[in-house]
Length: 371
Ligand SMILES: Cc1cc2nc3c(=O)[nH]c(=O)nc-3n(C[C@H](O)[C@H](O)[C@H](O)COP(=O)(O)OP(=O)(O)OC[C@H]3O[C@@H](n4cnc5c(N)ncnc54)[C@H](O)[C@@H]3O)c2cc1C
Image 1 (cartoon, protein in one colour):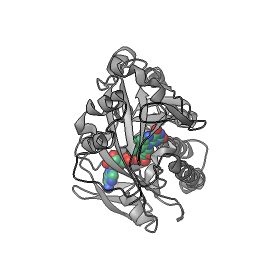
Image 2: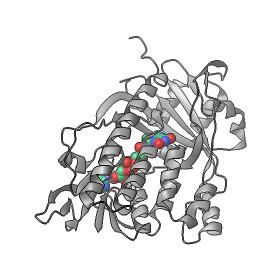
Image 3: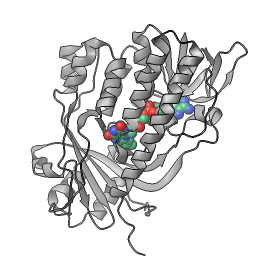
Image 4: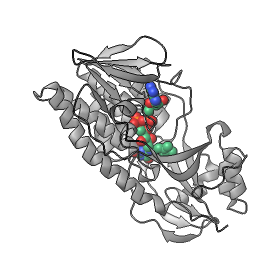
């Protein structure tokens, strides 16, 4: 069986690793000109479900490495004012494992065939039941199965389920990261908490690697080359719905909104890397439209994009990858039956993941300032 995967994000790479373990040839086609073309290193909280799925797709010999490059998710889940006084509680939160997306992506890339600069533009189902994937540049690729793991703006989805389109929630946020130096030790009660300011919320999370990733790979799995990254604080400022973007850089925009805040919070934003501070909008994709199982399917944000406040987008993409791997490789199902089994389960929990993330959104979104 030959599988073509569009998108070298977490879901696509995890599937390719899982299939590779089962001896199935999977080639990944990525639109970006290079794997490191964009900075994509934010901290992810992995649930037990996400972590189990990830481990299921990785070779056993890398499980110790995965453990070493993860950290513990913890947080007091408080609501704090801008001077860091407690004014409320966020309620029970997620426990789990934290991992850096950039580091995880490097682990997942190891040993795979990934073609970069390969933007999929569409596909056609061939007379023999296979599929031909087409790209903006380069030759088309024929495969038994095309998996659209190409994220929220999926080009595969545009053909397979054209009425399923992203919805913009109107919520914008700026995300950045700052090295976790001793100066910020005093901020620990703010990790996992929400700092509620006037018309904005600031969320902090610590990424503490059990072992620095580069060293961990050298010691535990020398065939894996991981980036040299140190501990950091990930911060995210959620702006009022449809608030003005302004002409300031994302980092300047955050600084202009936290004047008079606790000096450690200002220092945290000031010391962040400007290149890695980005304005993002929250868009969701709600799976609804169904199609008959065939040689094309979807996975991850391409079919169920969640709000990051749900903390479940990556977990669900990894769950998809593991489920599709198992459907294709375990048991004695025929090919279309295997794809159909995957889609039936994925639609159910994928829709639930999007609903859950939207339910969680209001707790983090500041009310718009009166005009
Ligand atoms: C700030 C932030 C924090 C988050 N925190 C969490 C968290 O704590 N826990 C959690 O579970 N989730 C979290 N998420 C969500 C999570 O990152 C996503 O749900 C997850 O990355 C989705 O994986 P994916 O493989 O489906 O898509 P993506 O990771 O988006 O990958 C899609 C890939 O496809 C490529 N592509 C796009 N179009 C094409 C094309 N036409 N042809 C070829 N390639 C294409 C893209 O370049 C990209 O590499 C967070 C998201 C953000 C933004």
